[in-house]
Structures are given as structure tokens and as C-alpha cells.
Length: 229
Image 1 (cartoon, rainbow, N blue to C red):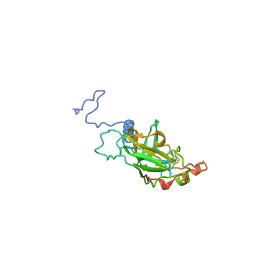
Image 2 (tube, helix red, strand yellow):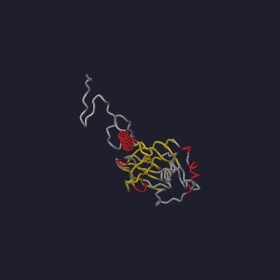
Image 3 (cartoon, one colour):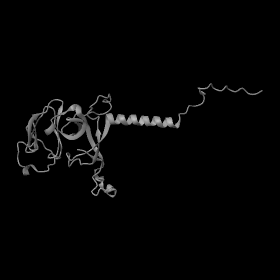
Image 4 (cartoon, one colour):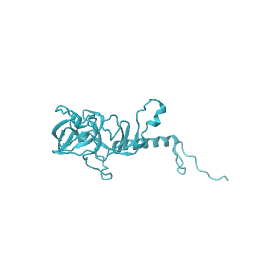
């Protein structure tokens, strides 16, 4: 007498005792989807890469510096993660990336100089906050103030006084003689702030000769992981 055997499963069903295994293609597809979702989440809420395109922040930040920007530190968007990650107020001296007010599709990077309610004035390139001179060890001039001809019409020399409205900031580049900043386009709305610059993760100067042989020497190795102040 032949032993009894289990009937074959009906077409379209599987044996419940046999473990279900996904196909390799499906596993790869799901892994890629998870990676893309995580990357979009990180880029939207946490960090973003930014490249310095101009010399407006020299000598602190150089053309070709690649930065990581903390997008969550000022909590520009309500994500529900505020209790998990630290959130800081914007302070004078912070270097931040923001939407350019005259063209929000472009990103700018400058230093916070004036806070809401403060009066800003420039006298012979010296910044004054509420009438008091501001110490700025980071500032760079192409022409020193004592060598520049005084002019009431030159915004690099004289500006203000103006009062920063609530919900806005006064931004300036460290390279004061070569910076398109709040002196020219006005105050920065708080909602245009994207994040705070953290550190340089890579820096690359233009090759002098323009050939591939010059590429290794164009990397500024001493600036990699340079913290931004």
C-alpha cells in the first residue's frame, strides 16, 4: 500500500510550509527605493551639499569649496522631529545658505550681521550695531579702509543707518569689497533660510594648466574637513 502524499497545491497558491523568497530583482528594487527615500529625507530635512561659486566669502570660504549644510539646525520646516534634533536660533556670525531674495531659485551664502530690531550702519567700511562698532576678525578687504577714497555714494564705504525688520536678517559677505549682499538687495526674510554651513568636505581649485595631470595638485587637501566659523 503506497503511503499517502499531500495533494499538489492549486495553481496560483503556495505551500504554507515552504518559506516565501523574494526574487533577486525585487530585493534590489526595494533596496534602491529605500535608499532613494532616505536620501530625499536627509536632503530635505537634515543636510545638503553646497559648492562655493564666488569669492564673496574669502578668505574664509574659497571658490571650489564643497560644504555640508545643516538644514535642520534652524528648523525652517515643521517636520515633527524638533524634540529629537537640537534646534538653535539664528545668531550674529552664523554663516548660512539661503534663497536669494531677488531670485529664490538661486542659493546664496553669507554671514549674519544684523538681527531683527537692530540698527545697522557702515562708516568707512566699519560695521556699527546700534551705534557700537562690531569686531570682525573674519572680514577681508581688497582695499583697506584707510587707503580707500571716502564716498557717500559707495555702499562699500557708507551705508545706513537702517533698522532690521522683525522676521528678517542683514547679511554680508566676508569679502566686503566683492560681495552682493544686504547692502544691495535688502533684508533676508527668515523663511528663505535653508541652513547653517558646517564644514568643508572637499575643496578643488581650478587647474592651472587645464589638463588631467594637474587635477591631483588642484585638490586643497588642507581644507578637507575644515570647520566653518
